Image (cartoon, rainbow, N blue to C red):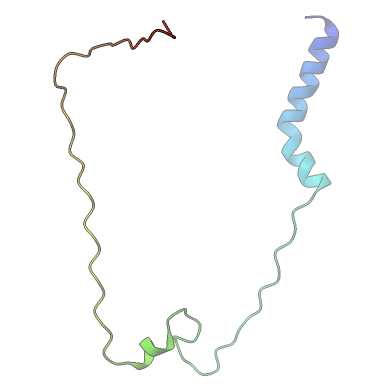
Length: 93
């Protein structure tokens, strides 16, 4: 490698490792939108949740379904020595 190739290669490595800082300088990330503080004047704990309104009002909720059991995978055993086979036909030999 001549001197020019070594210089170009060194410049490429410097750019490779400093590309993160360069890209953040050239294209800064967009700031997140400001969060609005929602005051809870009613004192209700469920007003800020995703729970449906009927579930909070009905005293008798149906019981939760049990989680499904994980599937059991059985290991297979070898049924003899490994055999290599070659498939051929008249067009491909």
